[in-house]
Length: 391
Image (cartoon, rainbow, N blue to C red; front, top):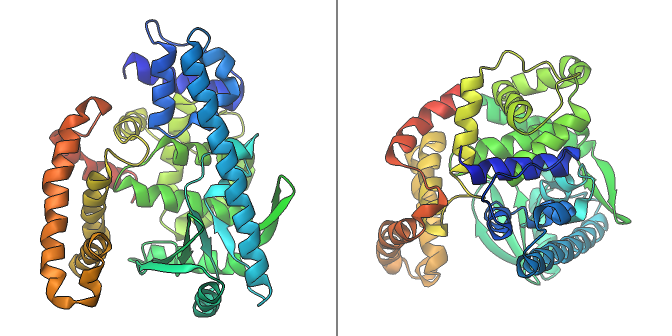
Protein backbone atom coordinates (compact mmCIF):
# COMPACT_ATOMS: atom_id res chain seq x y z
CA UNK A 1 0.00 0.00 0.00
CA UNK A 2 1.51 3.33 -1.04
CA UNK A 3 1.39 6.69 0.79
CA UNK A 4 -1.51 8.04 -1.25
CA UNK A 5 -3.60 4.95 -0.58
CA UNK A 6 -2.88 5.16 3.15
CA UNK A 7 -3.92 8.80 3.02
CA UNK A 8 -7.23 7.93 1.37
CA UNK A 9 -7.99 5.35 4.05
CA UNK A 10 -7.23 7.91 6.74
CA UNK A 11 -9.55 10.45 5.08
CA UNK A 12 -12.37 7.90 5.00
CA UNK A 13 -11.85 7.00 8.67
CA UNK A 14 -11.82 10.67 9.62
CA UNK A 15 -15.19 11.27 7.96
CA UNK A 16 -16.76 8.01 9.15
CA UNK A 17 -15.67 8.02 12.77
CA UNK A 18 -14.32 11.53 13.36
CA UNK A 19 -10.81 10.14 13.83
CA UNK A 20 -7.89 12.59 13.73
CA UNK A 21 -6.60 12.84 10.16
CA UNK A 22 -3.08 11.48 9.68
CA UNK A 23 -2.01 12.17 6.11
CA UNK A 24 1.22 10.69 4.82
CA UNK A 25 4.24 12.92 4.31
CA UNK A 26 4.67 14.43 0.85
CA UNK A 27 1.02 14.09 -0.24
CA UNK A 28 -0.38 17.39 -1.50
CA UNK A 29 -3.91 18.80 -1.20
CA UNK A 30 -4.33 18.33 -4.96
CA UNK A 31 -3.37 14.66 -4.74
CA UNK A 32 -5.90 14.12 -1.96
CA UNK A 33 -8.57 15.80 -4.06
CA UNK A 34 -7.73 13.68 -7.10
CA UNK A 35 -8.08 10.51 -4.99
CA UNK A 36 -11.51 11.71 -3.91
CA UNK A 37 -12.41 12.26 -7.58
CA UNK A 38 -11.01 8.89 -8.64
CA UNK A 39 -13.20 6.99 -6.19
CA UNK A 40 -16.28 9.26 -6.49
CA UNK A 41 -15.97 10.45 -2.90
CA UNK A 42 -15.73 14.22 -3.44
CA UNK A 43 -18.98 15.06 -1.67
CA UNK A 44 -18.61 12.45 1.04
CA UNK A 45 -15.09 13.58 1.99
CA UNK A 46 -15.95 17.28 1.77
CA UNK A 47 -17.36 17.10 5.30
CA UNK A 48 -13.77 17.33 6.55
CA UNK A 49 -12.36 19.54 3.81
CA UNK A 50 -10.81 21.85 6.41
CA UNK A 51 -8.51 19.01 7.44
CA UNK A 52 -7.79 17.57 4.01
CA UNK A 53 -7.18 20.79 2.09
CA UNK A 54 -5.51 23.43 4.24
CA UNK A 55 -2.91 24.99 1.95
CA UNK A 56 -4.07 24.98 -1.68
CA UNK A 57 -6.93 27.46 -2.14
CA UNK A 58 -7.40 26.57 -5.82
CA UNK A 59 -7.84 22.89 -4.98
CA UNK A 60 -10.14 23.76 -2.12
CA UNK A 61 -12.32 25.73 -4.52
CA UNK A 62 -12.52 22.78 -6.94
CA UNK A 63 -13.31 20.41 -4.10
CA UNK A 64 -16.08 22.63 -2.74
CA UNK A 65 -17.54 23.06 -6.21
CA UNK A 66 -17.55 19.30 -6.77
CA UNK A 67 -19.22 18.69 -3.42
CA UNK A 68 -21.88 21.25 -4.23
CA UNK A 69 -22.52 19.51 -7.55
CA UNK A 70 -22.98 16.18 -5.74
CA UNK A 71 -25.37 17.84 -3.30
CA UNK A 72 -27.44 19.46 -6.03
CA UNK A 73 -27.61 16.23 -8.02
CA UNK A 74 -28.76 14.37 -4.92
CA UNK A 75 -31.59 16.86 -4.45
CA UNK A 76 -32.58 16.41 -8.09
CA UNK A 77 -32.52 12.63 -7.83
CA UNK A 78 -34.51 12.75 -4.62
CA UNK A 79 -37.20 14.86 -6.29
CA UNK A 80 -37.25 12.42 -9.23
CA UNK A 81 -37.81 9.51 -6.84
CA UNK A 82 -40.72 11.30 -5.19
CA UNK A 83 -42.25 11.98 -8.61
CA UNK A 84 -41.88 8.30 -9.54
CA UNK A 85 -43.57 7.29 -6.27
CA UNK A 86 -46.47 9.65 -6.99
CA UNK A 87 -46.95 8.41 -10.57
CA UNK A 88 -46.88 4.73 -9.69
CA UNK A 89 -48.76 5.27 -6.44
CA UNK A 90 -51.82 6.30 -8.44
CA UNK A 91 -51.89 2.68 -9.66
CA UNK A 92 -51.19 1.13 -6.26
CA UNK A 93 -47.57 0.32 -7.14
CA UNK A 94 -44.78 1.13 -4.69
CA UNK A 95 -41.34 1.42 -6.34
CA UNK A 96 -38.77 0.16 -3.84
CA UNK A 97 -35.46 1.97 -4.30
CA UNK A 98 -32.14 0.14 -4.30
CA UNK A 99 -28.70 1.66 -3.67
CA UNK A 100 -28.50 5.44 -4.21
CA UNK A 101 -30.75 7.27 -1.76
CA UNK A 102 -31.67 4.02 -0.03
CA UNK A 103 -28.00 3.64 0.95
CA UNK A 104 -27.53 7.36 1.56
CA UNK A 105 -30.19 7.30 4.29
CA UNK A 106 -27.73 5.48 6.59
CA UNK A 107 -25.14 8.28 6.20
CA UNK A 108 -24.80 11.20 8.65
CA UNK A 109 -25.31 13.60 5.70
CA UNK A 110 -27.20 11.63 3.00
CA UNK A 111 -27.12 14.34 0.35
CA UNK A 112 -23.31 14.30 0.16
CA UNK A 113 -23.21 10.71 -1.10
CA UNK A 114 -22.73 10.77 -4.86
CA UNK A 115 -25.73 9.33 -6.73
CA UNK A 116 -25.44 7.75 -10.19
CA UNK A 117 -28.80 6.53 -11.46
CA UNK A 118 -32.08 5.44 -9.88
CA UNK A 119 -32.56 1.70 -9.40
CA UNK A 120 -35.87 0.35 -8.20
CA UNK A 121 -37.69 -2.93 -7.85
CA UNK A 122 -41.36 -3.82 -7.94
CA UNK A 123 -42.97 -7.21 -7.25
CA UNK A 124 -42.76 -9.37 -10.42
CA UNK A 125 -46.52 -9.38 -10.86
CA UNK A 126 -46.39 -5.57 -11.18
CA UNK A 127 -43.38 -5.28 -13.52
CA UNK A 128 -45.14 -5.14 -16.91
CA UNK A 129 -47.82 -2.77 -15.66
CA UNK A 130 -45.16 -0.53 -14.11
CA UNK A 131 -43.22 -0.26 -17.38
CA UNK A 132 -46.34 0.58 -19.40
CA UNK A 133 -47.28 3.32 -16.95
CA UNK A 134 -43.81 4.88 -17.15
CA UNK A 135 -43.86 4.90 -20.96
CA UNK A 136 -47.29 6.53 -20.92
CA UNK A 137 -45.98 9.20 -18.54
CA UNK A 138 -43.11 10.25 -20.78
CA UNK A 139 -40.27 8.04 -19.53
CA UNK A 140 -38.28 7.04 -22.60
CA UNK A 141 -37.65 3.33 -22.81
CA UNK A 142 -34.01 2.31 -23.27
CA UNK A 143 -32.14 -0.99 -23.39
CA UNK A 144 -33.68 -4.17 -22.06
CA UNK A 145 -30.77 -5.88 -20.30
CA UNK A 146 -32.97 -8.70 -18.95
CA UNK A 147 -31.93 -7.99 -15.36
CA UNK A 148 -33.43 -4.55 -15.70
CA UNK A 149 -35.15 -2.30 -18.22
CA UNK A 150 -33.73 1.20 -18.70
CA UNK A 151 -35.80 4.39 -18.79
CA UNK A 152 -34.67 7.98 -19.27
CA UNK A 153 -36.32 11.26 -18.41
CA UNK A 154 -34.89 14.77 -18.09
CA UNK A 155 -31.32 13.48 -18.12
CA UNK A 156 -31.85 10.90 -15.37
CA UNK A 157 -31.44 7.16 -15.97
CA UNK A 158 -33.80 4.77 -14.24
CA UNK A 159 -33.33 1.01 -13.97
CA UNK A 160 -36.55 -0.92 -13.37
CA UNK A 161 -35.38 -4.34 -12.17
CA UNK A 162 -37.05 -7.60 -13.10
CA UNK A 163 -34.76 -9.12 -10.50
CA UNK A 164 -31.74 -7.86 -8.61
CA UNK A 165 -29.40 -10.86 -8.59
CA UNK A 166 -27.69 -12.36 -11.63
CA UNK A 167 -30.50 -14.95 -11.63
CA UNK A 168 -28.00 -17.69 -12.36
CA UNK A 169 -28.03 -20.01 -9.34
CA UNK A 170 -30.26 -21.29 -6.57
CA UNK A 171 -28.65 -18.70 -4.28
CA UNK A 172 -29.57 -15.93 -6.72
CA UNK A 173 -33.15 -17.10 -6.96
CA UNK A 174 -33.41 -17.27 -3.16
CA UNK A 175 -32.10 -13.71 -2.92
CA UNK A 176 -34.66 -12.39 -5.39
CA UNK A 177 -37.53 -14.14 -3.63
CA UNK A 178 -36.48 -12.50 -0.35
CA UNK A 179 -36.27 -9.11 -2.06
CA UNK A 180 -39.69 -9.54 -3.69
CA UNK A 181 -41.20 -10.31 -0.32
CA UNK A 182 -39.39 -7.28 1.06
CA UNK A 183 -41.04 -5.19 -1.66
CA UNK A 184 -44.44 -6.36 -0.52
CA UNK A 185 -43.52 -5.35 3.04
CA UNK A 186 -41.52 -2.23 2.22
CA UNK A 187 -40.99 0.65 4.61
CA UNK A 188 -40.78 4.42 4.15
CA UNK A 189 -37.64 6.55 4.54
CA UNK A 190 -37.39 10.32 4.71
CA UNK A 191 -34.52 12.49 3.48
CA UNK A 192 -34.84 16.26 3.50
CA UNK A 193 -38.59 15.93 4.00
CA UNK A 194 -38.97 13.70 0.91
CA UNK A 195 -40.45 10.23 1.44
CA UNK A 196 -39.69 7.11 -0.61
CA UNK A 197 -39.92 3.33 -0.29
CA UNK A 198 -37.10 0.98 0.68
CA UNK A 199 -36.65 -2.58 1.87
CA UNK A 200 -36.60 -3.42 5.60
CA UNK A 201 -33.15 -3.13 7.19
CA UNK A 202 -32.32 -6.85 7.28
CA UNK A 203 -33.35 -7.40 3.67
CA UNK A 204 -31.56 -4.27 2.47
CA UNK A 205 -28.23 -5.71 3.59
CA UNK A 206 -28.65 -8.37 0.91
CA UNK A 207 -28.92 -5.62 -1.70
CA UNK A 208 -25.61 -4.13 -0.57
CA UNK A 209 -23.90 -7.52 -0.63
CA UNK A 210 -25.46 -8.42 -3.97
CA UNK A 211 -24.35 -5.12 -5.45
CA UNK A 212 -20.76 -5.65 -4.28
CA UNK A 213 -20.82 -9.23 -5.57
CA UNK A 214 -21.99 -8.01 -8.98
CA UNK A 215 -19.23 -5.42 -9.22
CA UNK A 216 -16.46 -7.63 -7.87
CA UNK A 217 -16.44 -9.21 -11.33
CA UNK A 218 -15.78 -5.93 -13.14
CA UNK A 219 -14.41 -3.46 -10.61
CA UNK A 220 -15.79 -2.42 -7.22
CA UNK A 221 -15.37 1.09 -5.86
CA UNK A 222 -14.96 2.49 -2.36
CA UNK A 223 -18.34 4.20 -2.64
CA UNK A 224 -20.09 0.82 -2.71
CA UNK A 225 -17.88 -0.47 0.09
CA UNK A 226 -18.57 2.50 2.34
CA UNK A 227 -22.30 1.85 1.94
CA UNK A 228 -21.73 -1.57 3.50
CA UNK A 229 -19.47 -0.27 6.28
CA UNK A 230 -22.01 2.32 7.42
CA UNK A 231 -24.83 -0.21 7.22
CA UNK A 232 -22.85 -2.78 9.25
CA UNK A 233 -22.01 -0.20 11.90
CA UNK A 234 -25.62 0.91 12.27
CA UNK A 235 -27.37 -2.43 11.98
CA UNK A 236 -25.23 -5.58 12.09
CA UNK A 237 -24.23 -6.07 15.71
CA UNK A 238 -23.69 -9.59 17.03
CA UNK A 239 -27.28 -9.98 18.14
CA UNK A 240 -28.76 -8.94 14.78
CA UNK A 241 -26.31 -11.15 12.89
CA UNK A 242 -27.08 -14.17 15.04
CA UNK A 243 -30.86 -13.74 15.21
CA UNK A 244 -31.70 -12.34 11.78
CA UNK A 245 -29.09 -11.61 9.15
CA UNK A 246 -26.87 -14.70 9.20
CA UNK A 247 -29.70 -16.98 8.08
CA UNK A 248 -30.65 -14.63 5.22
CA UNK A 249 -27.04 -14.35 4.07
CA UNK A 250 -26.61 -18.13 4.12
CA UNK A 251 -29.75 -18.65 2.00
CA UNK A 252 -28.28 -16.29 -0.61
CA UNK A 253 -24.70 -17.59 -0.51
CA UNK A 254 -23.46 -14.23 0.78
CA UNK A 255 -22.30 -15.07 4.30
CA UNK A 256 -18.58 -15.32 3.48
CA UNK A 257 -18.68 -12.06 1.50
CA UNK A 258 -20.34 -10.29 4.43
CA UNK A 259 -17.70 -11.55 6.83
CA UNK A 260 -14.71 -10.63 4.66
CA UNK A 261 -16.04 -7.17 3.84
CA UNK A 262 -16.68 -6.48 7.52
CA UNK A 263 -13.37 -7.85 8.82
CA UNK A 264 -11.49 -5.83 6.16
CA UNK A 265 -13.31 -2.68 7.30
CA UNK A 266 -12.28 -3.40 10.89
CA UNK A 267 -8.64 -3.89 9.88
CA UNK A 268 -8.24 -0.92 7.57
CA UNK A 269 -11.17 1.48 7.85
CA UNK A 270 -11.85 1.78 11.55
CA UNK A 271 -15.12 -0.14 11.83
CA UNK A 272 -15.69 -0.92 15.50
CA UNK A 273 -15.01 -4.42 16.82
CA UNK A 274 -17.16 -4.20 19.92
CA UNK A 275 -20.47 -5.99 19.35
CA UNK A 276 -19.31 -6.97 15.83
CA UNK A 277 -17.33 -10.14 16.44
CA UNK A 278 -19.15 -12.41 13.98
CA UNK A 279 -16.40 -11.98 11.36
CA UNK A 280 -13.49 -12.80 13.68
CA UNK A 281 -12.62 -16.05 11.87
CA UNK A 282 -11.67 -14.31 8.59
CA UNK A 283 -7.95 -14.42 7.80
CA UNK A 284 -6.09 -11.14 7.48
CA UNK A 285 -4.36 -12.23 4.27
CA UNK A 286 -7.70 -12.42 2.46
CA UNK A 287 -8.63 -8.94 3.70
CA UNK A 288 -5.34 -7.60 2.35
CA UNK A 289 -6.01 -9.13 -1.07
CA UNK A 290 -9.51 -7.67 -1.15
CA UNK A 291 -8.29 -4.19 -0.30
CA UNK A 292 -5.58 -4.41 -2.95
CA UNK A 293 -8.20 -5.34 -5.52
CA UNK A 294 -10.50 -2.44 -4.58
CA UNK A 295 -7.60 0.01 -4.87
CA UNK A 296 -6.92 -1.32 -8.37
CA UNK A 297 -10.43 -0.54 -9.58
CA UNK A 298 -10.91 3.23 -9.16
CA UNK A 299 -14.67 3.74 -8.82
CA UNK A 300 -15.86 1.15 -11.35
CA UNK A 301 -12.74 0.34 -13.38
CA UNK A 302 -10.34 2.15 -15.66
CA UNK A 303 -12.40 3.25 -18.66
CA UNK A 304 -15.84 2.72 -20.14
CA UNK A 305 -14.35 0.34 -22.73
CA UNK A 306 -12.40 -1.58 -20.10
CA UNK A 307 -15.44 -1.75 -17.84
CA UNK A 308 -17.60 -3.12 -20.65
CA UNK A 309 -15.02 -5.75 -21.56
CA UNK A 310 -14.54 -6.94 -17.97
CA UNK A 311 -18.32 -6.98 -17.61
CA UNK A 312 -18.42 -9.47 -20.48
CA UNK A 313 -15.80 -11.66 -18.78
CA UNK A 314 -17.79 -11.52 -15.57
CA UNK A 315 -20.98 -12.44 -17.41
CA UNK A 316 -19.28 -15.46 -18.92
CA UNK A 317 -18.31 -16.75 -15.49
CA UNK A 318 -21.76 -16.03 -14.02
CA UNK A 319 -24.21 -16.63 -16.83
CA UNK A 320 -22.67 -18.78 -19.55
CA UNK A 321 -22.09 -18.28 -23.26
CA UNK A 322 -25.65 -17.58 -24.45
CA UNK A 323 -26.29 -14.74 -21.98
CA UNK A 324 -22.80 -13.35 -22.68
CA UNK A 325 -23.52 -13.19 -26.43
CA UNK A 326 -26.75 -11.34 -25.73
CA UNK A 327 -24.90 -8.83 -23.55
CA UNK A 328 -22.31 -8.21 -26.29
CA UNK A 329 -25.15 -7.64 -28.76
CA UNK A 330 -26.74 -5.12 -26.37
CA UNK A 331 -23.51 -3.11 -26.21
CA UNK A 332 -23.00 -3.31 -29.98
CA UNK A 333 -26.51 -2.12 -30.86
CA UNK A 334 -26.33 0.62 -28.24
CA UNK A 335 -23.31 2.15 -29.98
CA UNK A 336 -24.82 1.57 -33.45
CA UNK A 337 -28.61 1.80 -32.85
CA UNK A 338 -29.57 1.38 -36.51
CA UNK A 339 -28.31 -2.23 -36.32
CA UNK A 340 -31.33 -3.02 -34.16
CA UNK A 341 -33.68 -2.11 -37.02
CA UNK A 342 -31.60 -3.45 -39.92
CA UNK A 343 -30.33 -6.97 -39.06
CA UNK A 344 -27.82 -7.04 -41.93
CA UNK A 345 -25.85 -4.32 -40.11
CA UNK A 346 -25.50 -6.36 -36.93
CA UNK A 347 -22.16 -8.01 -37.91
CA UNK A 348 -20.71 -4.53 -38.53
CA UNK A 349 -21.91 -3.43 -35.09
CA UNK A 350 -20.19 -6.43 -33.53
CA UNK A 351 -16.94 -5.73 -35.38
CA UNK A 352 -17.06 -2.10 -34.25
CA UNK A 353 -17.70 -3.19 -30.67
CA UNK A 354 -14.76 -5.59 -30.68
CA UNK A 355 -12.59 -2.80 -32.11
CA UNK A 356 -13.82 -0.46 -29.38
CA UNK A 357 -12.82 -2.87 -26.65
CA UNK A 358 -9.62 -4.14 -28.21
CA UNK A 359 -8.08 -0.97 -29.63
CA UNK A 360 -9.66 2.02 -27.91
CA UNK A 361 -9.85 0.29 -24.54
CA UNK A 362 -6.20 -0.80 -24.72
CA UNK A 363 -5.11 2.70 -25.72
CA UNK A 364 -6.91 4.22 -22.74
CA UNK A 365 -5.52 1.55 -20.46
CA UNK A 366 -1.95 2.40 -21.51
CA UNK A 367 -2.60 6.13 -21.41
CA UNK A 368 -3.92 5.91 -17.85
CA UNK A 369 -1.56 3.24 -16.57
CA UNK A 370 -0.65 5.39 -13.56
CA UNK A 371 -4.15 4.83 -12.16
CA UNK A 372 -3.35 1.48 -10.65
CA UNK A 373 -4.73 -0.74 -13.41
CA UNK A 374 -4.78 -4.50 -12.99
CA UNK A 375 -1.66 -6.40 -14.07
CA UNK A 376 -1.93 -9.72 -15.88
CA UNK A 377 -0.87 -11.52 -12.72
CA UNK A 378 -3.65 -9.82 -10.78
CA UNK A 379 -6.21 -10.66 -13.45
CA UNK A 380 -5.17 -14.30 -13.23
CA UNK A 381 -5.58 -14.28 -9.45
CA UNK A 382 -8.92 -12.47 -9.60
CA UNK A 383 -10.87 -15.69 -10.08
CA UNK A 384 -9.27 -17.16 -6.97
CA UNK A 385 -10.19 -14.06 -4.98
CA UNK A 386 -13.82 -14.43 -6.05
CA UNK A 387 -13.74 -18.06 -4.95
CA UNK A 388 -12.28 -17.11 -1.57
CA UNK A 389 -15.03 -14.53 -1.15
CA UNK A 390 -17.66 -17.18 -1.82
CA UNK A 391 -19.00 -15.54 -4.97
